[in-house]
Length: 419
Image 1 (cartoon, one colour):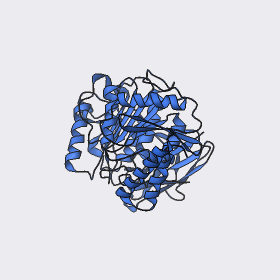
Image 2 (cartoon, helix red, strand yellow; image 1 turned 45 degrees about the vertical axis):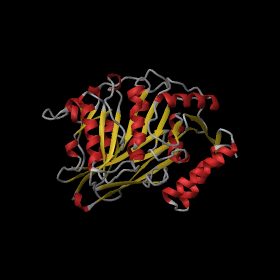
Image 3 (tube, rainbow, N blue to C red; image 1 turned 135 degrees about the horizontal axis):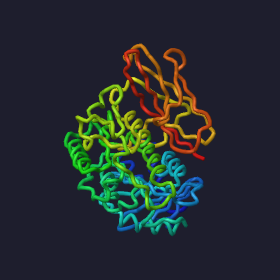
Image 4 (cartoon, one colour; image 1 turned 90 degrees about the horizontal axis):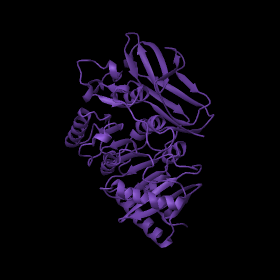
């Protein structure tokens, strides 16, 4: 067996046995020990491959799914300070979005304080191993949880020219002002509404200070979430990545396409408890409110996806078939919300559910991002089918209007369609 190939199976065995955090740690130690005895640097996982290298005592791993002939960008994923995300590279969600985008996924085994210079050294080593062109100019989507969120925050600060976008998830170590060159990079800063008051205040302060300077940033308050990884990647982070990839990185290389603040959309933070959080084109934001304290979103597509994720107490649900769990659970990962993984040409069927509290229905509209696909009658079937899916990361939602004219938004549903 090749080197670190021992790591994901042994850690997964600890998960399956229900061993909890210490069991995972023991499994990881055993996996690393076996990897050290094996002595090679490549992990075959079916037809996909994971390569590894050590820099400054930290082990980096790179997922390269089959079918990637050229690198169009990199996904950098930073785990929590006590986390080890190498085993997560086998998750169907990471493999799917990597293959769809042409972005290998780079992660590491532990620790805070990862800097792009260290990661660049790892990228250089890994490029030599896998034979794909990657260097210090390759576009990067920076994503991280907890202390890894601080590492994601470090990318726009130190490498603004190559940072496509950044997704800081409960980033307790995210701190310090962005440089002027990074203010124009789209970002999402997530915290859970059940996290400690101190952590919530810290993230709110970070957002307010940077948004006031013109940072293209939105604050995401995740309903029902504590300090962990939940549905934010499936229902918000991955659609965010897809939209920014399509807009800023059409050629798979730097320089990235610039983004204008006034061309974006804004979400009103005071409306998250309404039936649908209010979103506006930048020019249409209420004049009595401060645009530089509103949540900035790249376009209308992202604004609708954001509203579907951030609206509290939703009275409308959206489900689909087929459905799969694409990310595995662990101590800090509660990824038990499904999505759909399929192939180009496949069919997906959606079902809209409406709670009685909505009242008498006036109409149901079905959307892909913000593009209306059709209507469902107020009574009768609440099923909508999408035929002949095309490759990409798709996000669907429903808007329900009652007879009083109030609009309710559903949760969104993400479909990963491989070629």
